[in-house]
Amino acid sequence: MPRFPLSSARVARSSLLFLLIVIVAACSSGGTASPAASPRAAASAPATAAAAFPVRLTDDDGTELTLFAEPQKIVSLTPAATEILFALGAGDRVVGKVEDIANYPPEADDIPVMGRFDGVDVEQIVAAGADLVIAGGSGGTPPAAIEQLRSLGVPVLIVYAETVDEALADIELTASAVGRPAQGEALVARMRQEFDQVAAATADLEKPRVFVETGNQPAIYGIADRSVYAEMVELAGGQPVTTGSATNWEMSVERLVAEDPEIILLADANYGVTAEEVTGRSGWQGITAVREGAIHPVDDIVVTRPGPRLTDGLLELVSAIHPDLDAGSDGS
Image (cartoon, rainbow, N blue to C red; front, side, top):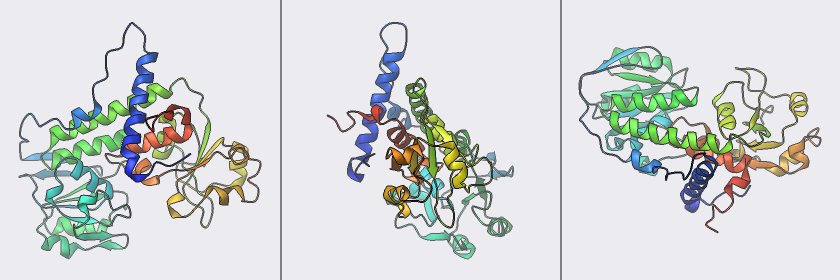
Protein backbone atom coordinates (compact mmCIF):
# COMPACT_ATOMS: atom_id res chain seq x y z
CA MET A 1 0.00 0.00 0.00
CA PRO A 2 1.53 3.33 -0.95
CA ARG A 3 1.80 5.70 2.00
CA PHE A 4 0.45 9.19 1.52
CA PRO A 5 3.14 11.91 1.68
CA LEU A 6 2.88 13.93 4.88
CA SER A 7 1.95 17.07 2.95
CA SER A 8 -1.05 15.37 1.33
CA ALA A 9 -2.14 13.11 4.20
CA ARG A 10 -5.01 15.36 5.30
CA VAL A 11 -6.27 15.74 1.71
CA ALA A 12 -6.13 11.98 1.21
CA ARG A 13 -7.92 11.39 4.51
CA SER A 14 -10.70 13.82 3.56
CA SER A 15 -11.03 12.21 0.12
CA LEU A 16 -11.32 8.74 1.61
CA LEU A 17 -13.88 9.90 4.15
CA PHE A 18 -15.90 11.59 1.39
CA LEU A 19 -15.76 8.38 -0.65
CA LEU A 20 -17.04 6.38 2.33
CA ILE A 21 -19.91 8.84 2.80
CA VAL A 22 -20.84 8.43 -0.88
CA ILE A 23 -20.75 4.63 -0.56
CA VAL A 24 -22.98 4.71 2.53
CA ALA A 25 -25.44 7.05 0.81
CA ALA A 26 -25.54 4.89 -2.31
CA CYS A 27 -26.24 1.76 -0.29
CA SER A 28 -28.99 3.32 1.83
CA SER A 29 -32.59 2.57 0.98
CA GLY A 30 -35.57 4.81 0.46
CA GLY A 31 -35.13 7.36 -2.30
CA THR A 32 -32.54 10.07 -2.61
CA ALA A 33 -30.11 10.28 0.26
CA SER A 34 -29.79 13.69 1.79
CA PRO A 35 -26.27 15.13 1.97
CA ALA A 36 -24.32 14.06 5.03
CA ALA A 37 -23.60 16.84 7.48
CA SER A 38 -20.00 17.97 7.48
CA PRO A 39 -18.21 16.05 10.28
CA ARG A 40 -15.78 18.93 10.70
CA ALA A 41 -18.50 21.54 11.18
CA ALA A 42 -19.60 20.08 14.51
CA ALA A 43 -16.08 20.06 15.89
CA SER A 44 -15.66 23.78 15.29
CA ALA A 45 -19.05 24.81 16.63
CA PRO A 46 -18.78 27.44 19.38
CA ALA A 47 -19.80 26.63 22.91
CA THR A 48 -23.40 27.57 23.59
CA ALA A 49 -22.78 28.37 27.25
CA ALA A 50 -19.84 28.97 29.54
CA ALA A 51 -18.80 26.00 31.65
CA ALA A 52 -19.79 26.28 35.29
CA PHE A 53 -17.33 25.68 38.11
CA PRO A 54 -16.86 24.09 40.52
CA VAL A 55 -17.09 20.79 38.64
CA ARG A 56 -16.92 17.36 40.21
CA LEU A 57 -15.47 14.52 38.15
CA THR A 58 -14.63 10.84 38.54
CA ASP A 59 -11.50 9.77 36.69
CA ASP A 60 -10.68 6.40 35.10
CA ASP A 61 -9.20 5.10 38.35
CA GLY A 62 -12.46 5.84 40.15
CA THR A 63 -11.04 8.81 42.06
CA GLU A 64 -13.37 11.76 42.59
CA LEU A 65 -11.93 15.18 41.85
CA THR A 66 -13.42 18.61 42.43
CA LEU A 67 -12.08 21.55 40.44
CA PHE A 68 -13.20 24.84 41.97
CA ALA A 69 -12.10 27.04 39.08
CA GLU A 70 -11.26 26.60 35.41
CA PRO A 71 -7.64 25.35 35.21
CA GLN A 72 -5.23 27.88 33.71
CA LYS A 73 -1.94 25.97 34.03
CA ILE A 74 -2.27 22.40 32.81
CA VAL A 75 0.39 19.69 32.65
CA SER A 76 -0.30 16.79 30.27
CA LEU A 77 1.46 13.54 31.14
CA THR A 78 0.12 11.51 28.20
CA PRO A 79 0.66 12.30 24.50
CA ALA A 80 -3.04 11.71 23.83
CA ALA A 81 -4.03 14.25 26.48
CA THR A 82 -1.75 16.82 24.86
CA GLU A 83 -3.46 16.27 21.50
CA ILE A 84 -6.90 16.46 23.11
CA LEU A 85 -6.14 19.72 24.90
CA PHE A 86 -5.02 21.39 21.69
CA ALA A 87 -8.02 20.00 19.77
CA LEU A 88 -10.31 21.51 22.44
CA GLY A 89 -8.68 24.93 22.09
CA ALA A 90 -6.99 24.74 25.49
CA GLY A 91 -3.44 24.34 24.18
CA ASP A 92 -2.45 27.82 25.29
CA ARG A 93 -2.96 26.73 28.90
CA VAL A 94 -0.59 23.75 28.71
CA VAL A 95 2.55 24.65 30.68
CA GLY A 96 4.14 21.19 30.70
CA LYS A 97 3.90 17.92 28.81
CA VAL A 98 5.20 14.39 28.57
CA GLU A 99 7.86 13.57 25.99
CA ASP A 100 6.26 12.49 22.69
CA ILE A 101 8.19 10.63 20.01
CA ALA A 102 5.62 11.81 17.45
CA ASN A 103 6.05 15.44 18.51
CA TYR A 104 2.37 16.17 17.89
CA PRO A 105 0.80 18.64 17.55
CA PRO A 106 3.62 20.85 16.24
CA GLU A 107 2.20 23.78 18.24
CA ALA A 108 3.22 21.94 21.42
CA ASP A 109 6.88 21.76 20.41
CA ASP A 110 8.10 24.52 22.74
CA ILE A 111 6.21 23.36 25.83
CA PRO A 112 8.63 22.20 28.57
CA VAL A 113 8.90 18.42 28.97
CA MET A 114 8.09 17.46 32.56
CA GLY A 115 7.64 13.72 32.11
CA ARG A 116 9.61 11.01 30.29
CA PHE A 117 9.62 7.24 30.08
CA ASP A 118 11.88 7.09 33.12
CA GLY A 119 9.90 9.36 35.42
CA VAL A 120 8.06 12.59 36.19
CA ASP A 121 9.65 15.83 37.42
CA VAL A 122 7.24 16.61 40.26
CA GLU A 123 9.32 19.57 41.42
CA GLN A 124 9.13 21.17 37.96
CA ILE A 125 5.35 20.65 37.81
CA VAL A 126 4.83 22.28 41.19
CA ALA A 127 7.17 25.17 40.30
CA ALA A 128 5.11 25.78 37.14
CA GLY A 129 2.06 26.40 39.33
CA ALA A 130 0.03 23.59 37.73
CA ASP A 131 -3.62 23.69 38.75
CA LEU A 132 -4.42 20.48 36.82
CA VAL A 133 -2.31 17.47 35.85
CA ILE A 134 -3.71 14.91 33.42
CA ALA A 135 -1.94 11.60 34.03
CA GLY A 136 -2.00 8.14 32.49
CA GLY A 137 -3.50 5.21 34.33
CA SER A 138 -2.31 1.60 34.64
CA GLY A 139 1.28 2.71 35.15
CA GLY A 140 1.34 5.15 32.24
CA THR A 141 2.32 7.74 34.83
CA PRO A 142 4.23 6.34 37.83
CA PRO A 143 1.72 5.96 40.69
CA ALA A 144 4.27 7.36 43.15
CA ALA A 145 4.42 10.60 41.17
CA ILE A 146 0.62 10.85 41.14
CA GLU A 147 0.51 10.28 44.89
CA GLN A 148 3.19 12.89 45.50
CA LEU A 149 1.43 15.50 43.37
CA ARG A 150 -1.86 14.93 45.17
CA SER A 151 -0.13 15.14 48.56
CA LEU A 152 1.15 18.57 47.49
CA GLY A 153 -2.37 19.72 46.66
CA VAL A 154 -2.06 19.47 42.85
CA PRO A 155 -5.28 18.13 41.27
CA VAL A 156 -4.59 15.02 39.15
CA LEU A 157 -7.04 13.54 36.64
CA ILE A 158 -6.19 9.98 35.56
CA VAL A 159 -7.22 8.78 32.11
CA TYR A 160 -6.76 5.29 30.70
CA ALA A 161 -8.72 4.14 27.66
CA GLU A 162 -8.68 0.49 26.58
CA THR A 163 -11.45 0.76 23.98
CA VAL A 164 -12.66 3.24 21.39
CA ASP A 165 -15.69 4.13 23.53
CA GLU A 166 -13.45 4.75 26.53
CA ALA A 167 -11.19 6.97 24.40
CA LEU A 168 -14.18 9.08 23.38
CA ALA A 169 -15.38 9.22 26.98
CA ASP A 170 -11.95 10.47 28.06
CA ILE A 171 -12.12 13.29 25.52
CA GLU A 172 -15.38 14.44 27.09
CA LEU A 173 -13.96 13.96 30.61
CA THR A 174 -10.93 16.09 29.74
CA ALA A 175 -13.15 18.71 28.14
CA SER A 176 -15.25 18.97 31.30
CA ALA A 177 -12.11 19.31 33.43
CA VAL A 178 -10.77 22.26 31.42
CA GLY A 179 -14.08 24.08 31.00
CA ARG A 180 -14.69 23.04 27.38
CA PRO A 181 -17.59 20.56 27.62
CA ALA A 182 -19.36 21.81 24.48
CA GLN A 183 -16.18 21.53 22.43
CA GLY A 184 -15.64 18.02 23.79
CA GLU A 185 -19.15 16.95 22.87
CA ALA A 186 -18.75 18.39 19.36
CA LEU A 187 -15.40 16.64 18.83
CA VAL A 188 -16.77 13.29 20.03
CA ALA A 189 -19.90 13.69 17.88
CA ARG A 190 -17.73 14.27 14.81
CA MET A 191 -15.55 11.26 15.61
CA ARG A 192 -18.55 9.00 16.24
CA GLN A 193 -20.02 10.08 12.91
CA GLU A 194 -16.80 9.14 11.13
CA PHE A 195 -16.61 5.78 12.91
CA ASP A 196 -20.22 5.09 11.92
CA GLN A 197 -19.54 6.03 8.29
CA VAL A 198 -16.59 3.65 8.09
CA ALA A 199 -18.51 0.84 9.80
CA ALA A 200 -21.43 1.26 7.37
CA ALA A 201 -19.13 1.32 4.33
CA THR A 202 -17.30 -1.88 5.35
CA ALA A 203 -20.24 -3.78 6.85
CA ASP A 204 -20.98 -5.95 3.80
CA LEU A 205 -17.41 -6.43 2.60
CA GLU A 206 -15.45 -9.63 3.01
CA LYS A 207 -13.43 -9.61 6.21
CA PRO A 208 -9.85 -10.69 5.44
CA ARG A 209 -7.72 -12.14 8.24
CA VAL A 210 -5.38 -9.37 9.42
CA PHE A 211 -2.28 -9.73 11.58
CA VAL A 212 -0.87 -6.53 13.08
CA GLU A 213 2.78 -6.88 14.06
CA THR A 214 3.55 -4.58 16.96
CA GLY A 215 7.17 -5.64 17.51
CA ASN A 216 9.84 -8.11 16.40
CA GLN A 217 12.42 -8.04 19.21
CA PRO A 218 13.20 -10.27 21.02
CA ALA A 219 10.16 -12.20 19.76
CA ILE A 220 7.30 -11.51 17.36
CA TYR A 221 4.52 -9.48 18.98
CA GLY A 222 0.99 -9.13 17.71
CA ILE A 223 -2.24 -7.86 19.20
CA ALA A 224 -4.02 -9.18 22.24
CA ASP A 225 -7.62 -10.33 22.30
CA ARG A 226 -10.12 -7.54 22.96
CA SER A 227 -7.41 -4.88 22.58
CA VAL A 228 -7.97 -1.51 20.94
CA TYR A 229 -5.90 -2.78 17.98
CA ALA A 230 -8.31 -5.68 17.51
CA GLU A 231 -11.29 -3.36 17.80
CA MET A 232 -9.87 -0.96 15.22
CA VAL A 233 -9.17 -3.78 12.74
CA GLU A 234 -12.76 -4.98 13.10
CA LEU A 235 -14.12 -1.46 12.60
CA ALA A 236 -11.98 -1.16 9.45
CA GLY A 237 -13.54 -4.31 8.00
CA GLY A 238 -10.97 -6.93 8.94
CA GLN A 239 -10.85 -10.08 11.02
CA PRO A 240 -8.05 -9.58 13.57
CA VAL A 241 -5.55 -12.39 14.08
CA THR A 242 -4.73 -12.14 17.78
CA THR A 243 -2.40 -13.86 20.20
CA GLY A 244 -5.20 -15.83 21.84
CA SER A 245 -4.78 -13.98 25.13
CA ALA A 246 -6.14 -10.73 26.53
CA THR A 247 -2.84 -9.97 28.29
CA ASN A 248 -0.07 -11.64 26.26
CA TRP A 249 1.13 -9.81 23.13
CA GLU A 250 3.75 -12.36 22.10
CA MET A 251 2.80 -14.28 18.94
CA SER A 252 4.22 -17.72 18.25
CA VAL A 253 5.14 -18.51 14.65
CA GLU A 254 3.17 -21.74 14.96
CA ARG A 255 -0.03 -19.90 15.84
CA LEU A 256 0.57 -17.29 13.14
CA VAL A 257 1.05 -19.94 10.43
CA ALA A 258 -2.05 -21.80 11.63
CA GLU A 259 -4.16 -18.61 11.55
CA ASP A 260 -2.76 -17.82 8.05
CA PRO A 261 -3.39 -14.06 7.83
CA GLU A 262 -4.27 -12.70 4.39
CA ILE A 263 -2.86 -9.27 5.28
CA ILE A 264 0.04 -8.33 7.55
CA LEU A 265 0.20 -4.76 8.85
CA LEU A 266 3.51 -3.54 10.24
CA ALA A 267 2.80 -1.29 13.20
CA ASP A 268 6.55 -1.52 13.89
CA ALA A 269 7.43 -0.03 10.49
CA ASN A 270 8.29 3.27 12.20
CA TYR A 271 11.08 1.39 13.96
CA GLY A 272 12.73 -0.01 10.83
CA VAL A 273 10.80 -3.21 10.09
CA THR A 274 10.16 -3.70 6.36
CA ALA A 275 8.06 -5.95 4.15
CA GLU A 276 11.28 -7.37 2.67
CA GLU A 277 12.46 -8.44 6.11
CA VAL A 278 9.16 -10.14 6.86
CA THR A 279 9.20 -11.97 3.52
CA GLY A 280 12.63 -13.39 4.33
CA ARG A 281 11.74 -14.79 7.74
CA SER A 282 12.15 -18.52 8.19
CA GLY A 283 8.89 -20.42 8.32
CA TRP A 284 6.73 -17.55 7.06
CA GLN A 285 6.68 -18.48 3.36
CA GLY A 286 3.48 -20.50 3.69
CA ILE A 287 1.48 -17.56 5.03
CA THR A 288 -0.97 -16.17 2.48
CA ALA A 289 -0.02 -12.53 3.13
CA VAL A 290 3.66 -13.33 2.54
CA ARG A 291 3.01 -15.34 -0.63
CA GLU A 292 0.83 -12.59 -2.07
CA GLY A 293 2.93 -9.65 -0.90
CA ALA A 294 0.11 -8.19 1.21
CA ILE A 295 2.41 -6.65 3.81
CA HIS A 296 1.83 -2.96 4.52
CA PRO A 297 3.19 -0.38 6.99
CA VAL A 298 0.78 1.50 9.24
CA ASP A 299 1.32 4.32 11.71
CA ASP A 300 0.89 2.66 15.10
CA ILE A 301 0.52 6.03 16.83
CA VAL A 302 -2.58 7.24 14.99
CA VAL A 303 -4.08 3.74 15.00
CA THR A 304 -3.97 3.36 18.77
CA ARG A 305 -3.37 6.73 20.47
CA PRO A 306 -6.68 7.47 22.24
CA GLY A 307 -7.06 11.03 21.01
CA PRO A 308 -8.66 13.11 18.26
CA ARG A 309 -6.64 11.43 15.46
CA LEU A 310 -8.06 7.98 16.18
CA THR A 311 -10.38 8.30 13.18
CA ASP A 312 -7.32 9.09 11.02
CA GLY A 313 -5.90 5.77 12.18
CA LEU A 314 -9.11 3.99 11.29
CA LEU A 315 -9.02 5.41 7.77
CA GLU A 316 -5.39 4.32 7.41
CA LEU A 317 -6.44 0.78 8.34
CA VAL A 318 -9.27 0.90 5.81
CA SER A 319 -6.78 1.94 3.12
CA ALA A 320 -4.59 -1.05 3.95
CA ILE A 321 -7.33 -3.66 4.40
CA HIS A 322 -9.72 -2.53 1.65
CA PRO A 323 -7.59 -0.56 -0.84
CA ASP A 324 -10.40 -0.57 -3.41
CA LEU A 325 -12.30 1.86 -1.17
CA ASP A 326 -9.38 4.25 -1.59
CA ALA A 327 -9.78 4.42 -5.37
CA GLY A 328 -9.61 8.01 -6.52
CA SER A 329 -8.41 9.42 -3.19
CA ASP A 330 -5.61 11.19 -5.02
CA GLY A 331 -8.22 13.27 -6.79
CA SER A 332 -8.05 11.39 -10.08
